[in-house]
Length: 304
Image 1 (cartoon, rainbow, N blue to C red):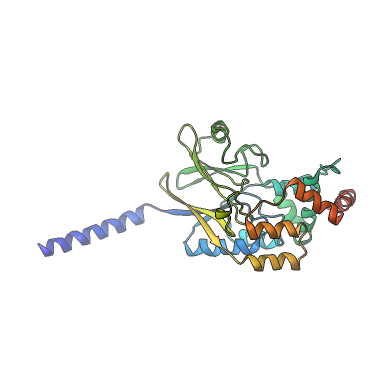
Image 2 (cartoon, one colour; image 1 turned 90 degrees about the horizontal axis):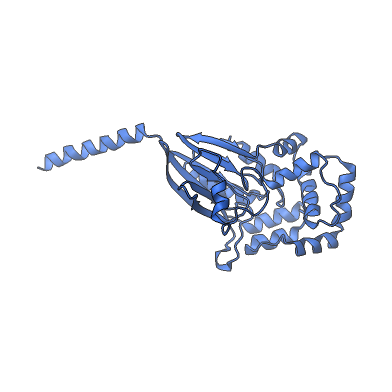
């Protein structure tokens, strides 16, 4: 009897070995809203490597507001992601290159966008700046026969509030209405989300790596958010949401060293997880640093 059990266990072991070899598992990291926070991105990429991630999907807003846009870009390019899409902050680059900023003097957030983009331009080459500005709005990729639809906010726009976690169900149904994809993946809101469309397809938001925020102080730990999908043979076997600690003090020191604009807002957000780039706060910073006049000069010079 004991001998029979040994034989059976060996057969089971061999069976699992065969199954593992036949069914290919792919682990895909979802990267969103890095916002130039290289310290946070480094921590995430190290964590993903330790978890044996096979590939990456980049969901936009890799740059802007943090101090190291070029470091973030280079680190992700080195991973050769399966797909990238444009975020609203990269789209600002596009608007600058196409000279779309007109009559913005009373628009506090437009001034913010111009000032922070000019900071980024100092560290990015013209080709890098232009490449980011021309990323696609939406992509569909198939991994192990499972079709995924990726975009920053919606498939037709990388801006707006249509996909905040508390949005109506109809808004989420629309994300896959014109697609045969089984999963929609996006960023933009900086909020982790997992929900379904009315017909049972999945919608995933991994949260923000560089500017993670929460209205609940107990949930606002200074950690980088990302997710890993495990896919095999047309199936999403697992979606793991991860929070990775990183050295916030080092990131703040880098921001100080590089004299990142709106540094007070950036620092307070990293330290508290509280969203700081409100209209009121931005207005105060614009007035304190004369950013309105600087932005007007930058647009007039048109050296993007």
